[in-house]
Amino acid sequence: MTVPDGFRELRFACECVSAKGEGYSDPWAAIAQKKLLIDGTKEEIINLVAREPRTIAQLAKELNISKPSVHAHINEMVGSELLRESEEWEKRYPTERYYELNFPVIGRDERSEFQAICEEMAERVASLFERKRAQLERAFDRTDLAERGWEFADLSQYLYAIVQRRARSLLEEREVLAKRERHRNGAAWVFWAEEPEAAGKKKYKDSDK
Image 1 (tube, rainbow, N blue to C red):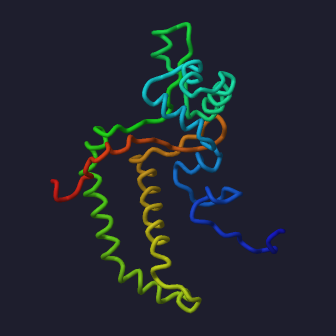
Image 2 (cartoon, one colour):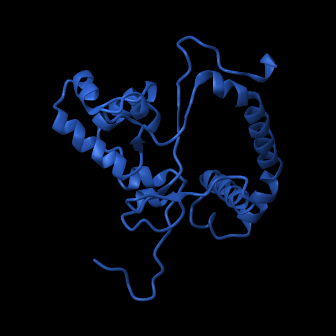
Image 3 (cartoon, one colour):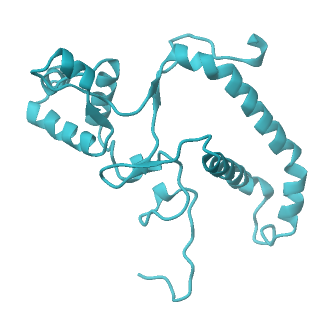
């Protein structure tokens, strides 16, 4: 089935949900769209090498799967540049090939250094969005959306996404945020991971300042 001539196809909320991959996407969307972490084994490998670089033999033993299977996963992740060879570890153990992550992992203690600042910035953005709500609602009233059965609340996430996307674009243009890097397999992404909160640890609140 094809769309009629002259019809301009819709842009979805994220190109990661589109078979054509056209439109807006978050910097990490290509990880999902290109299915770079499609199975649990790759995620387990990432979790293991995040602790310290490992060889294929070590990973095979810890995961209880064959070396050829691990080798295939490693080749794919090195090809997509989720993993890389660890030069530091290979200098220490020159007869073996070690692999490490090719993206940053933010530890719990490291995250705590940024938390209060990020919470303050988030509060300012949220407050600004609230202050602008009346203007946004008046703009909504000037459209035909209500006649088509939609309410302002149905568009609230869309409107916030516009703000977030434009802010990201501006910060990239001003070289405050890193732009997506195109990798060997053609996918362009920025990616990271973070350690979860320790069990039972209280999350930061304004009252804790």
